[in-house]
Length: 357
Image (cartoon, rainbow, N blue to C red; front, side, top):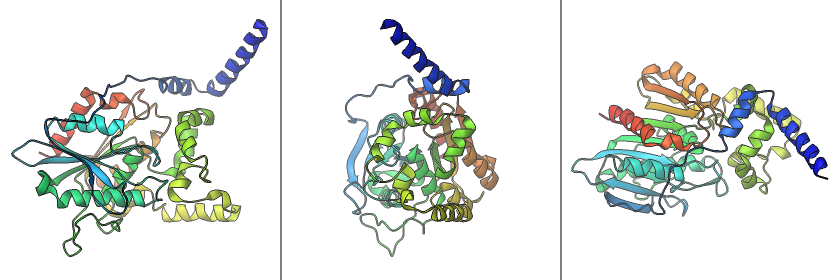
């Protein structure tokens, strides 16, 4: 019996090696994604270094449209970092782990921080989340004097799904995605949703190219499925076959083959107007573009780093190298704690200090 167990175990091991072995890099990526150094957080977001306004409503579109604002004590208005959490459009909120790591550092280093909650896919489909974040930006700018930060020095940061939202908000103009009024909005005195800096951490930019990216990186489907198990579970009973379909409410299972082919051709022709890349090409120039920082890890199984490489290439072509900075971190997985180490947050602070000088 014991011998039989060894044989079965050997067969299973051989199968795993067979799945992964054709690419030793895939093996490294899989095992690196199992573990990364952890940054400890206490159980509270309490802070004595300034004023905190938690669950501050910014629109009446949903009870989930609120933000957490932290403003350091200062005699002069300081820059504001708008934080947009990730979670595959189906998880997390304004107190996500990554958002906390950001605001806990920056509120103690001279920056106001606003962590934005927005409607997730299970509540409302695209473009609701984009409209929420842009409404929050306008709310924050309209109330800058009240809370004590500088309305002309806004950075927007987002990770994963939040990176997608940050780029699309930063690249779209004031007339786009503006259908959600903020609390106190006066249509006769429009407020801009413009930001001066975009900080994109491992954001998905094109849903339609992710499968090709995975194939190019030679990451097996079973590995990707295991890495994104939490997302698979979130949508398994929705009737949609993937997060993209759920977010866009595109029930591809009900489409005929002709309809699917027509949909693909339409997306290709119109460049997919729910992709941030579409709005970059449509709106940005060297003169009007925000400064853009892109960080991604090469061990990311959830969002292939090729997404960020493609974003960087497009931005460099359209707005020039002076406006764009891209860094690929070796051995960093998706949402890696290393990105939020004091060392890397210090590097990010230096970048922002320079841009807001």
